[in-house]
Length: 211
Image 1 (spheres, rainbow, N blue to C red):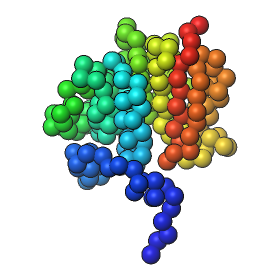
Image 2 (cartoon, rainbow, N blue to C red; image 1 turned 90 degrees about the vertical axis):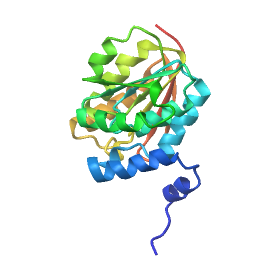
Image 3 (cartoon, one colour; image 1 turned 180 degrees about the vertical axis):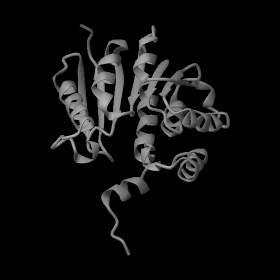
Image 4 (spheres, helix red, strand yellow; image 1 turned 60 degrees about the vertical axis):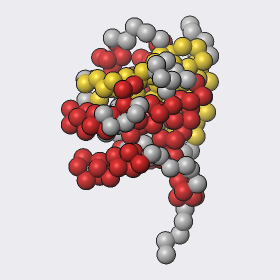
């Protein structure tokens, strides 16, 4: 019998996601591949909890994939809350939309096809909540692009901020970008943060002032 890990224990003692999300996981595995790109229960429930605490009117997700994290965030959005999701894979958008259409919170989610930096450049409203989980080479660029748009007191949550440990000895462009982003957050006097060793790392940032 395989020894239970602390990560397994945390998973098992975190309240389960809705059945629709469990179905989404299975369908992603069978139809899309790369199920490891899904945020997973501990991250998904953390996103729901944080969203519920800050009650955003407008949220942004950078990197939607098949919609697991988007639905997790939307669960806790106010009824008039909106979530803009950036995604460059048309197949993933079609897949995710099929689950949004079946969800009681799916109407709050708006997928947008195209590079996230292009989409961000079109946003002329204040963001209350941002979740970053896309191509790692642009992590620092995403962070710098969204901070000016986030309200004071708003949250930015970055997934995969430990990047499977590669940030300790960064070699590839993606390794360096994630490591540079973490250092930028640490020294950015516009924000405060806590960097948590949850799953593959979760950097949680709150904006405390504008320049």
